[in-house]
Image (cartoon, rainbow, N blue to C red; front, side, top):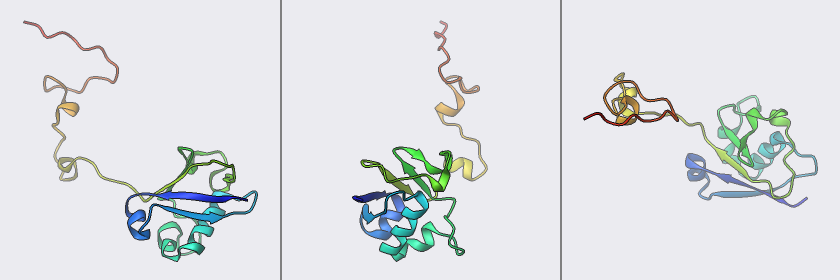
Length: 131
């Protein structure tokens, strides 16, 4: 089995001090096996990728060719040994507009709309300004 490369982002990349980690996996390996191999190769990932009981941390997003494993039919049991598979691992994400976090409504032009009313629906035609 060739080496599998996992690409890390944001705080995980900072923790590792590098963006990519390579691990050897046996044929038939799954997302769960990948995480175990990554933790074995880089123990500092344990608290980020696994819960205290050894199960996968659900807030971590592991993408296989751009698809989050959480939404794949086999979930953590999805085979990942396909050659050329792109694996991206992201820490939990959150955030939003600063005003929204402080309980204030978002009044940005995108949120309010061109004339201060409700935002237009995505793809809705724009009306010409009346003179």
